[in-house]
Length: 250
Ligand code: ADP
Ligand code: MG
Ligand code: MG
Image 1 (tube, rainbow, N blue to C red):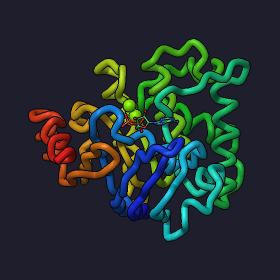
Image 2 (cartoon, protein in one colour):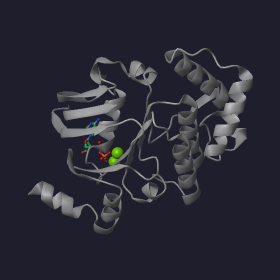
Image 3 (tube, protein in one colour):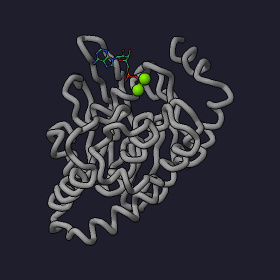
């Protein structure tokens, strides 16, 4: 589904990604872990189409298509979803109004018709439950005055409604209390599907004890320095990143 080959990227002449390689198949959950500043957010933003980064070498394909030939909107229409570390507030637009427009745009991109209001409401109520999002938040302006935990639940709720093929979550766990963390994990787990893949970026092993990844990659200084199974996350929790940082420096 996603193939990243020798990806190099810079910002203002500083190289941040220094040759990233990995592949994700449909239905797989991959985690990227690594210390602050290693380039994890840069990778996720490049995949979503943020143009402040310059791709200087390498390639990325999504379903065999060159991702860099696709505008950010086309990537979204093709089913690439990036969860933001800091969700935006949209005062004056209700959460459900915004979401219905987004769901219909996603359906149109998949060649499906508009959703009828009754089905939309049913689906919204059901999926809000996946992340234990209070129903009253559906009628409030998007994210306005939501607590940190409510914003994250809302983000996962939106993702569940949009049914993307590739879900990229960048530090969705940062600043969450244990209940919100579980709610986010329950949402993701409810969405797991043989056709849907997840790229989960996190500093901590905690989230990965709820969302069990198929593959774990360690990113240090713009490179993947080690890949393994879920046990690699547990190992990192014990050893920290220092060992990898030393290896990388050597
Ligand atoms: P991580 O998400 O792993 O903490 P980032 O991808 O956010 O790391 O950042 C990697 C490095 O790139 C950091 O040194 C950061 O300061 C730098 N960087 C990222 N984005 C920009 C930018 N827009 N302008 C300047 N430097 C940036
Ligand atoms: Mg960071
Ligand atoms: Mg980051």
